[in-house]
Length: 408
Ligand code: PMP
Image (cartoon, rainbow, N blue to C red; front, side, top):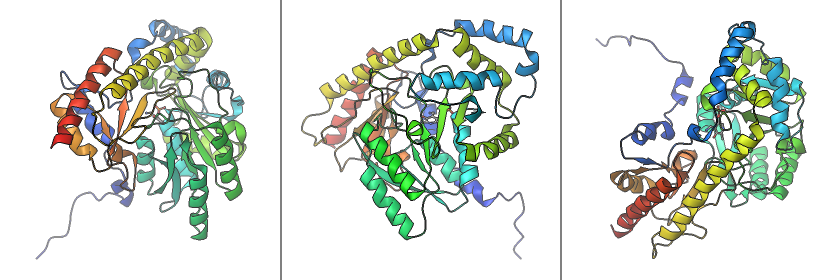
């Protein structure tokens, strides 16, 4: 006699939550002697956070009603007024009433998926794309189709072809997700002409865009490019974050939403967290109102620029000769945290990772950033949390692993 299955049964959607490769290598990154080119963590040691303890004490002492109590569903008014100033630093116009504060922009994306997608729906994202977005899509039972990228970002012609194919199958995506500035994982920035083209194609097909921009202020150049949101405010939902310019641990991000989504966004946010942390919101507000934040963000960006430069020079000098690397073999980021390396076509990044780990250097395999099996010969290198000397040593070790791999 077979006994009936007992014990708790999980919902079907539980199977959609799969471990992220980035989390998997986190443990490895912590091993003594390891140089981690894996994690995309901002380097808090570069930031001036001395003001924060005092600001927290002051906020608690004088405004306990907003810092320690349940708060406003869309976010504290003072922060909703400060966020448009942060966006204005990138030339983006936004009104306080368009801002929904969230516990990190990750939550913003989760809310958007909840509101726009049913299980089985399709979304379109760059290939490769942010691994945390893939986690949200997987958890919601949403299929991902990738648009090709080159060194100028998403290819609008490929997007148009994909939307035509999906329209013909009556499967138009619920939105196009993109990280146009200093893309995670490639570090690539979407060219200005392409921004206009992407916005135009999406509008023509009636498909909204989700523009995720956590790195935009961490630019290494003076170049400015229009935000997608600015080009088509009614069709582009914008995600912003304090994680990379202040602290990821505060968990403060936002959605800048067009009028047609604001009410539902607020209701969904309230149902998820009631309100975002009042203390964290007070600190994010103090950052904007009471510190020279534009100067400090620019100073931090300059340090990341040195790191990007150290990484790229080291790669240039040490990729093994003789191996058939594509040209360019790696991206040269103009901001943000990442560079993307393309190995010779037949190499496998997972096998290279084993050789790298033996030499105490770790990276993330490219395949983690795709849903369709691409990226096996690619990898992401993060330069954000290692000083230049460590990056040079990390690349030396990585090059050693490559030579060993090529010889085997
Ligand atoms: N989007 C992208 C592209 C990211 O790289 C990250 C963080 N790694 C996030 C969103 C999540 O940021 P937050 O801490 O604001 O949730």
